[in-house]
Image 1 (tube, helix red, strand yellow):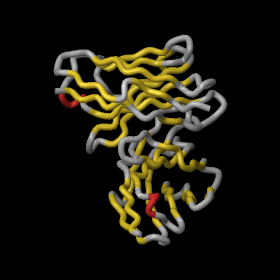
Image 2 (spheres, each protein chain N blue to C red; image 1 turned 60 degrees about the vertical axis):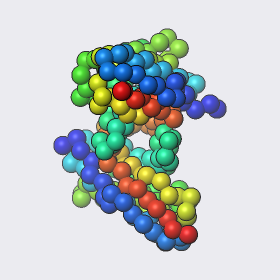
Image 3 (cartoon, each protein chain N blue to C red; image 1 turned 90 degrees about the vertical axis):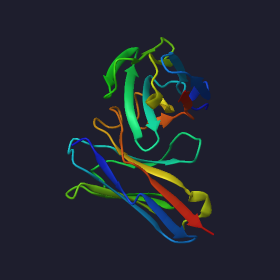
Image 4 (tube, rainbow over the protein chains, first blue to last red; image 1 turned 90 degrees about the horizontal axis):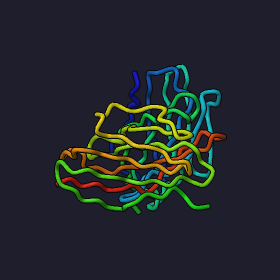
Length: 113
Length: 112
């Protein structure tokens, strides 16, 4: 019940296209859902996060969509660029972000020029 | 504002030895989290320290331990190293006024 399932495992998108990564969870006690971006050899960097009282949050080209009833959330990257090529992790936590983060397995995104 | 820093960047040990990894949180952050990122296993929660106390630990054996110092920096100790301990060890910090956990660059531990 602590798992977060992430798909797809890998994703190839053309420059200018939309990248979509999906995550699903079981534990209804989760109340904080961040997305992290990780480049090879670096630590994960926080991209954007959402709480269940909001169905969508947008920051620049990155949008989180949240479906509380389906226990699913997704990351949309609009106008994908080669510089977006990285591994993306969704995560979930209880008690805001104060508890441990439970991560999905990651999606390796490649944006072709 | 300086981010989370970790040292050393790389650490090579042999089986049975002990490893000590260090983390300095963002100034003003009181919580420190440790995660293990092993190949094929994703990011796994190890330990959470807040105000010098261990608040939670993940599903790891007791040979993984740590502490948080009065200046909120933290140390992760791994005793009796095993080959499967080879991984990137990540530290994250969080302010008591926010939700976000900010990660450091990690320490790459290799056990030979």
